[in-house]
Length: 112
Image 1 (cartoon, rainbow, N blue to C red):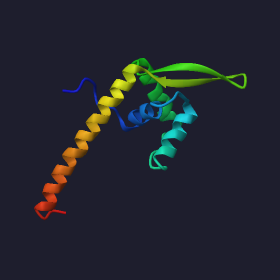
Image 2 (cartoon, one colour):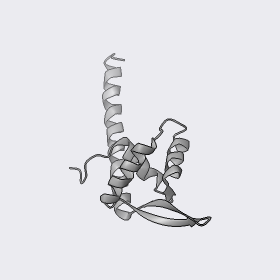
Image 3 (tube, helix red, strand yellow):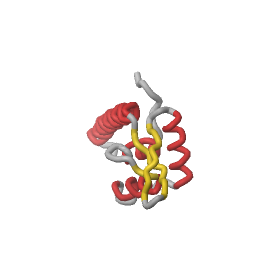
Image 4 (cartoon, rainbow, N blue to C red):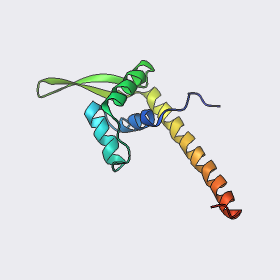
């Protein structure tokens, strides 16, 4: 049984982007785009809605960083957020393994 509801793809990717270091909104968008080699692009409207929900759930927190005398809203993942991210990663692995079994059975039965 899962301790949480499964995360949406966008939510998972945003937490993943924040896993190594705090980032501001545009940095999150670019991290996802660059790391995925352009396969995933998060729109700003989606990003900020997800960030708001993640903060309400305690999975991320906002920190202010002064860059060139300008405060930028920067986000970092919390320990709870890391726990959820690890759980979700394991869920994806289980889904991939299940998919492999089912597809392999189909191939063995001549269903391609």
